[in-house]
Image (cartoon, rainbow, N blue to C red; front, side, top):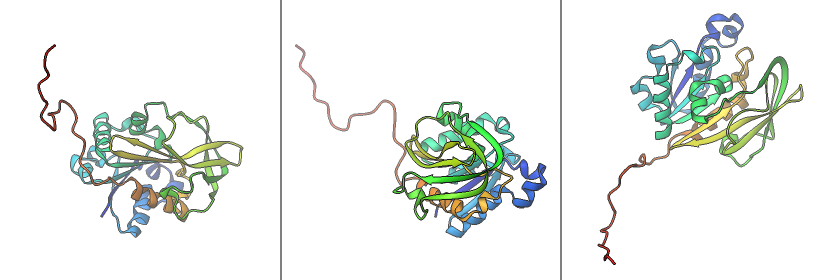
Length: 243
């Protein structure tokens, strides 16, 4: 069984009654709830938990880590970021949602600023499937339409994705690379754009479906971590005659 840890900053829910009404159990609780429908083992962790809830024991058991953050990226301890990075390189999957594009872990793995344009104006968003063969969009039609969302616009300062799966159009005219995959070491990474805290985006069944698919795509493959450094020969090396 795949073990998923849903990590959420959990600050908006405690500060903003609008967010608390939409997500009474937190964004992490909402995501955990629909993932449990898929017979996956789910735990949650938040910023204010000891070690941000990402202890060595938790990370060692996590197959896929889902990350949502916004207000307090700088409060995430660097040592925790390094531990998460190490686990991704070893094979743990990472799904970064919405404003997690500015998280320390995503910026570290991307090596760029991950900056973008944004606007909160109740834009309609249409997420177009541009790679219909990809398993992350299995069961999704030509597009997903969200009546209201925060706009993210290009240029999005990320490395060219290994695979671009979803491209957003917004009512105000902007476009955005909204579903991007990467591989870092043994680990798979999926960035998925929608999910502003004051909109009920994670209650949308198609958005849920994409995240469920992404968990199965990002889970580790069954192989050992590669051995690096000085290596003994596999076969005997015959002595070479000196000239």
